[in-house]
Image (cartoon, rainbow, N blue to C red; front, side, top):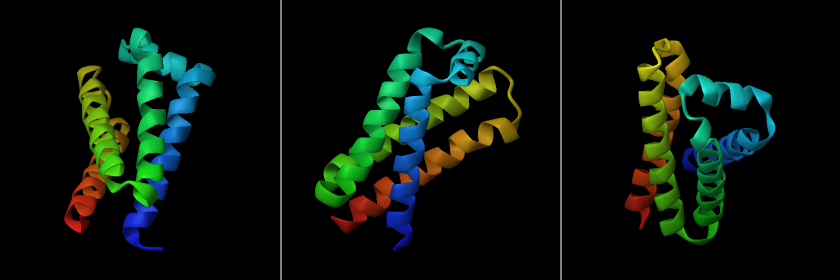
Length: 115
């Protein structure tokens, strides 16, 4: 399995889990309260699930869909990083969001180059 394929699978599975947990777990409800984003929790969860599905399905069948999904997830994570900084989380707490943003930006760029 190539590095790109591994990153796509990793990101898609991660965001599918994150998105579903937005609807099902008390922990995520508490986190969104802490972020000040309770009204946006379902929207963000839905975007994560759609991004994950678009990333995974698009990678194998429609690269443009995968590129759009990777860019969308990257943007979502950049915004998440900003929220983490705004609520004064430590860099260690904020790091996963920026790491996911970088991973998805890399996926988008690599797929664009392969077209």
